[in-house]
Length: 213
Image: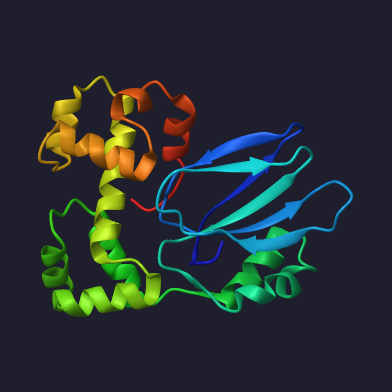
């Protein structure tokens, strides 16, 4: 697996289905095959909130999850670049050529995903001004430092719901001002309340997949 890849995955469905995709801070390169058609490649969007995706019966998908901040060269040419690749090793080699992550971006995102309380602290840690950090991430990821900090926090808080811990304690532990603040953030990012998420094993399971946090 090359340095820009976080994970690979496969999915197939015999029936028409709707899958809920939670925001994970990553983009995926996906090979999709429908019965009777040639495989096609596309790059997923960077989701800002949970989104339902319709999946056609007989669809087979294979995904290559990129690390947060990785950029893709010539997205419109994915099919021509990857069309004749069938083995994972071949695909990994091609991905080395068409994806890249600037070290400064990787470092900034790593700090923002750690247990920091503010963007200002991250800027100090990596030795740049907040304005420089803002410009860097907006240019390279089209998202602000605050976006990345809040996304990592809500994903960690959501995963902790699998433990028998009171919601007010989870909110305090992850730096929310109170339980109501945490609930608003859950609705914003995940479109579900903490109490309902606790009863949604499918979404909790997806939050445990590798992503930005």
